Length: 116
Image (cartoon, rainbow, N blue to C red; front, top):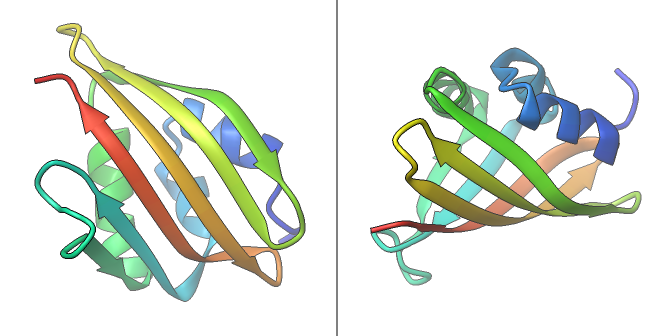
């Protein structure tokens, strides 16, 4: 697999492609979520590709749109802003920072806000 690019990530996120998204992670990757239910002192953590796979299968299977509003990348990090919307109009905004090693994601932190 070639090193992850901003274009690859954008295409997979916006296309809700769980299989491709999972391929971007190392076996021992960690993804953290900070939101209303998971404050910075107690973020939700997904450890390893098995937990990350279940997350992407769930999210990518939902009837919603994903749009990458901005993205920036270098050889060791990717940062992006993403806007999501459910069919009923509920919106979610996410800011994410990814750390790469060998062109794959080893760590990711998402800070997300949901409409109430």
